[in-house]
Length: 373
Image 1 (tube, one colour):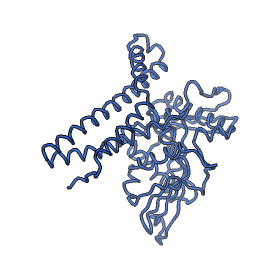
Image 2: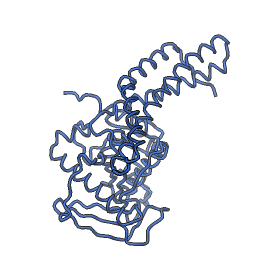
Image 3: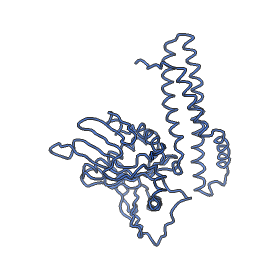
Image 4: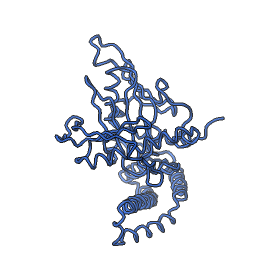
């Protein structure tokens, strides 16, 4: 297969160099190296794990800082090597080497653009892990099935990137699909990355549940919130909660506990109910459910201050059922289109199989674009 060749290699290399230099300045690589040394010193302290929460914060940040430095330095080395590769190909008139150089150029363009998007994640809560809830809306069983399809899309996206997911709640629907799924994406910057997914997602297709094979429009809500940190966790009075235990059930193919280890917590003042059945013990499920409850209480607290909530989510208007952010059309034509960014593709299959990076990155750029007055 022929490699697509650029018509302006010097210009492309110069542009990549300028972009990467800008990224290095935004990330402040010298500062990151100083922070890395400090974190490594803390990680080497034998008493670090006397405080488990602090130890986890240090090791997580250490991994993140080290990865940022290695990624930037690796791209810089590759860019320097690429200039040499193009020179060699030109001097020797070697078509094979020239194809190799153009392939590497395309790869670098993609990776540097992706890292540039990452530098836009500078919001107050962007570095946090993300708590995502998927809930079916109008459309009956089709919407419940659509909610399950969205869960699979995000699961496959996370799997492609090696991001661990914890399922905190899984409510199976009676006929098909799910009534609710709550999962946590456990990597730094997960919230900043996925915040643009917050909103209503609309599916148009021939319903597999209609014996007359009619076209059906379904809606599902994707709610994305930053996971609470010890610095902003909402205190929950034990007297204000009711804890119930029940037998676990889970998604198809997943090992299910046969003991009453699942936990449901009801926050009596607010009426918020959360449950967790992902862990193996009742104690672990209770701890995970409390994290979800605290996150929801923090979200409610922020919603009381609407201006602050808009800033956290980067909102550019109200998001509610019926005002979708993205359309997924499977009939009468194939198209996925984001109504905010204009990003679209006819490759609906890959998108629903988790290839959503283009949409995610476009939404990040959109969130960081100043609103028009």
